[in-house]
Image 1 (cartoon, rainbow, N blue to C red):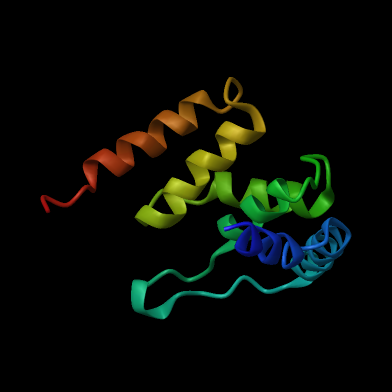
Image 2 (cartoon, rainbow, N blue to C red):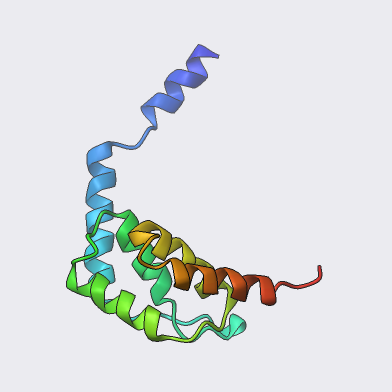
Length: 116
């Protein structure tokens, strides 16, 4: 048992390497096109890019974050996955400021829930 634990500890990722990978990912997301998901009929996935940037510690005042947030708020609530991501993003950014939009996201998800 101790040998297994020791082996796992030796394989643990280096926090500096993790931080470097996160920074590299953020650099990529700043200029990346937001790909679509054709089989799900989702034209773009900017909510996922925005959610990732926020979790990576990019501030709301960052120009790319502001751009993605503005576009997200102006878009209609249409597909389940982006709407669920939007609710999580707005909760993280400022739940009080965006409470009406979060409620609209929740209602959209309830209204579009499948019977199964």
